[in-house]
Length: 207
Image: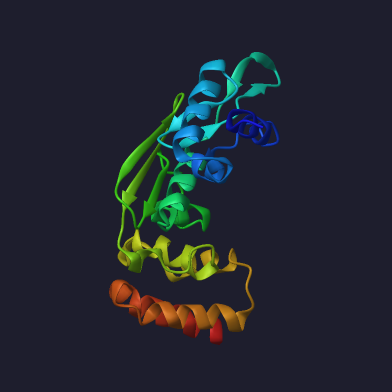
């Protein structure tokens, strides 16, 4: 069976509208043969190239079948980060908004990454990926990480202890776990400006 057929068969089993890396197909043949197969399939419309080395099967919009969705720009950014083994997470203002410390949702979709800054565009969607230090990307997908990045993007002078208390309640953790997290964050160098307010919050929760 030819590489082109093997690649096409694998693609037809993949979900529509979900980006994937060409690297997932290199086990089917030589790099050159897989790249040529992808190029041919792109010309037929079976797949769409949404970024360098990243493709997607178009997905018809249920309400308007003639319009096809290729992929979400943020999903492409995440695949890019996974390929290069970069850390990636929503920016601090997004975290602050999710916890109620920021009342207005960020106008732009921005992610922080340990990789280089760049922009991903799919159709009318745009996602900015900005380089940030590894220290700012600690505890990805963990409650303390969301709180940590939210604090990094706000000023302690304009954030009350009451607002902080309401924010940590959204983490839906036990009192013991919440206090442990607050203590951990209060000793971090990047949150030095927040130290007194976090200690005050810990005392309020402990009382």
